Amino acid sequence: MTSLLYHPGVVFALCFICTWIIYLLGKSMAPVGEASDGKGKVYACGEDIEADISPSYNWFHIAFVFTLLDIAVLMLATMPSNVNLALGVIWVFAAAFAIVVLLTDR
View 1 (spheres, rainbow, N blue to C red):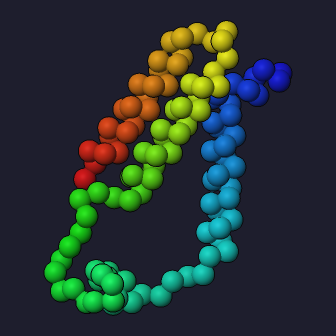
View 2: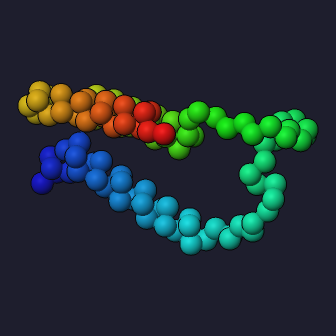
């Protein structure tokens, strides 16, 4: 039973569930923001910029890519020696595919 709890898939699922619960608790405690004209404007050192500047990337995607890389390395580094090598290869390809999808999504 204890070896099942240390399986990378089970660890990932437990971490995902705990993270989701923390997210929902934080969402329920967070104050509701108010709509404002200044929220969508560009800010640069206190100067108002009238140009429409938007980055070509999404910060959420970059943060998620970083998380995927961390999880992939954790899964490979902590994989038991008696686990089939194909599982590690599947993890690497799944992580690489997810990263490519996130970075090419516009």
